Length: 304
Image (tube, rainbow, N blue to C red; front, side):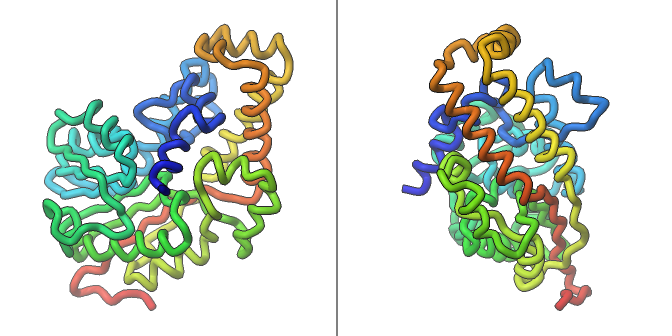
């Protein structure tokens, strides 16, 4: 089942996830937001940068206390719980039961926070109000829609529009392809190291994303290009790790800072380096974009 493959992406079956887990991935699993003045904080691990990306995404959402917010593809629930702590009525949904189980274990007692297993591309119409029309003030999806098929991303946009109240907002942060040929990823990833690791088909070209958002009824309020501080610097970090991991002295240095990496065998390091190299190749042709999409209020006219 697709859910099983997706769950494997966020387990040690994925060499890159396994590496990042030892370097700080836990409650959050996004790439992180890196600026030059903050790079020395890498010695403390990746979590600091992941929270910075989460903060920027939520700032675009402009959710206020009392807002009902749907955190689509919520993963392990950190962002959902953060919304609840800010005074929102937050509902975290994920199609992967293992992720929701972790979310409930971590944040099940957080205020104003609930979690459920659901497919955000086809929400149940009558399930505790999760899929009711015009039932949310905000919808948020941070670094998750790339797992969907092109048809799935289009369905996500349609569902988000349906469940939002007039005047509501959808913030969708995702990888985007920077040419009109997303199938190019097959040539850049011939051994499926990237696609198999994250259970993806292809990234959505930005122009097509925006067209489909408008077709769903959204007004595109703004787009924000976070390629340099997110994927650009994450890939550079991967380059440094690759160079260190290709020799014994470098691996010892990495293990000195992150002792959990001592469990890696030479074959594990070989697989991790190959996976990072494949991500670098794909990364040269992809971007990282935040889409701020508003559902028109009753008095507004939807853009064509």
